[in-house]
Image 1 (cartoon, rainbow, N blue to C red):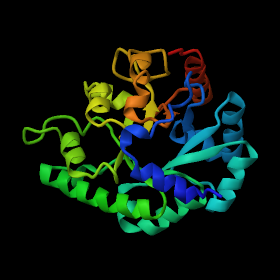
Image 2: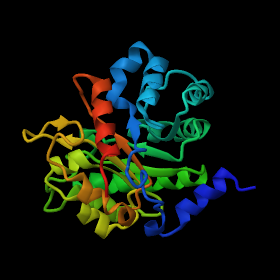
Image 3: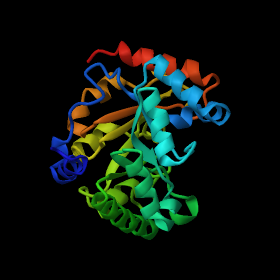
Length: 273
């Protein structure tokens, strides 16, 4: 019998370029939903919001904290609606303060990935700070690996402006072990920073198992997929190179969250590579 931990161990140990079993499906119509998008609805009716996402066609979700109950009860709630949660976010502070607890929660929810979503501004003022963050991430990644999980970091745009003549994101990636620290690339924030994700796909092949899908309007704000300027077809055509195994639809502040996630999923269902 193949155990989940054995599968994860192989995921962690193989060369990154071999990880992709591309990648959100050939049509990308099986992308998951980052629950931050519907956080206000979750606060009013958590299970009802999950049920509605499932009715729209989502089969995977990614947590951004905000668990409604103890992990076993949360997992049962997901399963009632045919949902899985392959990934979840845990703050850098939580990962530093109670890494064991965060890893237990992730395992009880049957996650494969645990993601640090950001680093507070006060902790990243210099390149030395970024190097220390990298060392911290290596430790977190090693502990995650021992727990049978894959650790990843989610970018915003603050990692890209030059600091001391260098790009902090590049410093972070150089400081971290690619076997221990993978990437969840947020395509909107990378576009907002004026960066091409394909440059990172090529430089770090297979190191990007997770991607956040959200579009950028001409005024630089977030919009639904297909409503903005990002060429998703060009980017996702390189999913195998990147090593993408899961995509998540996200919008940080949609006017109508359910309409937003439905519009984005409709776009993906019609995106042919």
